[in-house]
Length: 391
Image (cartoon, rainbow, N blue to C red; front, top):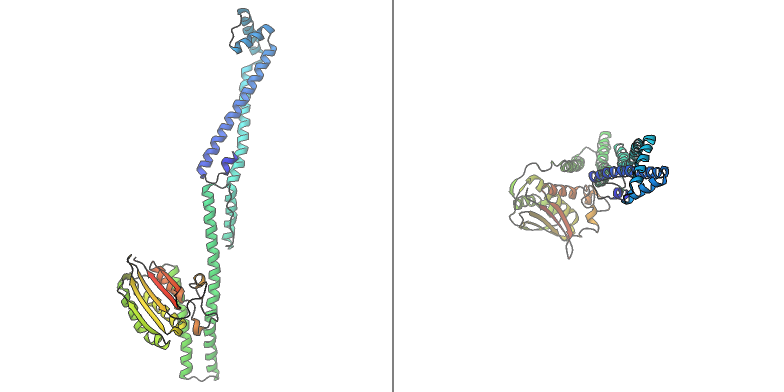
């Protein structure tokens, strides 16, 4: 019976049906064995109370041998007398009833034990769920080999949910700290400068106002990037898609960013092939501009940048940027698209930006059913590609 219970591959309905069937067989079997035992005991008692000739006749009948007529008459007379005096039928019925009650009691005890074994993982799961409700996302349950298929699946799903919530909480805590870190410096500069101008320490001239405006613009970019990521989490990032030639959208971005590229000493080369897809043009412009800003920030030493668009056979579109800069550091895949990650260890805003760039680009790619790809090129430099799929 324990072997039946320990099978983890059986579903709960099958385990329950098997246990019920085994309990019924056990109950009937115990009642049957009790009745057989008492019947044997009665038979032995009858033989002991019979006269010798009647006992011999009884044994002959039991063996299938017909005794002589006188012995058979003597046996029948004694059997009738014994039955009237001892009431064997009533005793046998009482024995069957008692054996049935005992077997039912034994089956009930075994059933309670097995039901507790089945319910134990659910009790552990309930306790872990209470911990999860109280805010402890590090809780988990150990999948028991005694659990049924449904319970094992439920425990696995619970562990995955708890792990996701724990990761989400850690990511939220980190993002909150990062937001505070990103906002602290420009706000401190703004507050200090404004207070200095009010106190007469700093002159209230055009250059000072221009410097303060740069800080305000930086704050605006952070807020907009955070808004973009928030919309992506709520799956509301891409709202208006229309059939568009992606190469024309990219070309417009490159034209508007020409001064920025020249300031970064980058020579632009293009390979824009017609690529038609239903896209949100404003979001694609935002993604391409973010990649161009990253290229100006990190790959300016290479003095070369190539931008390509390509329509793949499966109707998807790729926007690809290639440079001759220092490339990506090792282990980039694990952290590059994390919010507030920077390739520059110094986290300098002059070279590192807000750290939200690749996260925003990846969110826009995902919203278009695609993904962001990045790798180092052979011979030096980096490659970043935005893959967009048909809706």
